[in-house]
Amino acid sequence: MPLTIRLRNKTSIPVEVDTIQMETVRTQSADDVKATLVQNGNKQFPLGEFFDVSGSAGDDETMVWEGDCSHVKLIGTYLKSGTIIVDGNAGMHLGAEMTGGRIVVNGNAADWVGAEMHGGRIHVHGDAGHLVGAVYRGGRRGMTGGEILIDGSAGNEIGQTMRRGLIAVGGRSGDAPGFNMIAGSVLLFGEVGIRPGAGMRRGTIGFLGDVKSPDILPTFRYATTYRPVFLRYYLRRLQTLGFPVPVHCFSANYRRYSGDFLELGKGEILVRCS
Image (cartoon, rainbow, N blue to C red; front, side):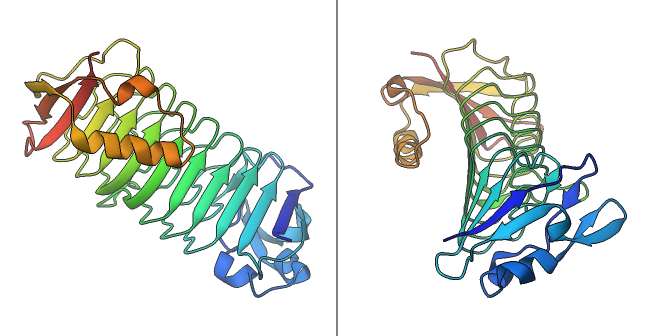
């Protein structure tokens, strides 16, 4: 039976649960987990003040958060192994700086999903907020590895300053996806906002949806129209992970734009054209 943490007393003041770490709770009893201190505003309280706790993560390394945890921050922060399932919504900083393992959200997630993550996989079956896979203010790199899959929509600056990894968004995306991108891949299947790839140095941003093509910045140059072989492997990977990929993406032609020539100019934007 997995360790189940069920929200009992919802609060408008966010609860920060970065002290609930998989490598710790898998050796603890349910009562020990309940006694772990978490941050609520400027005070600390035992987790049991807000949640009921049952089961154990000792056997299967699985932790389940139940309820509307939209005001619960830092779920899965620093995760190294195991599985975290959120049956409901998740708050800010989900999976931040994680290095391995898997997080599944059967609902929506707030800002900073997978911020500066280094490995592992996050799959949000609903929507996400701004700055998916992005760098924290004052930092040097966003995500440097791993996969972030958002079935629904996401906000602004997806993959800001990301260095490696894969981000896929099935629904609408906000402004400036791939802003200051160093490398990695961002694949977007829905409507997109303005200024894609601004300041990107390397990496790939793919617009694969049926909606109107985004306006490409004048600091990018058209290069060619072709069928990228590598993209088929990425799309097959997404399919195996349960991410919805339109069939026609596999056989489509793509316009390739190189840029941003205000930077290295070694990045690329792919726009599906058939």
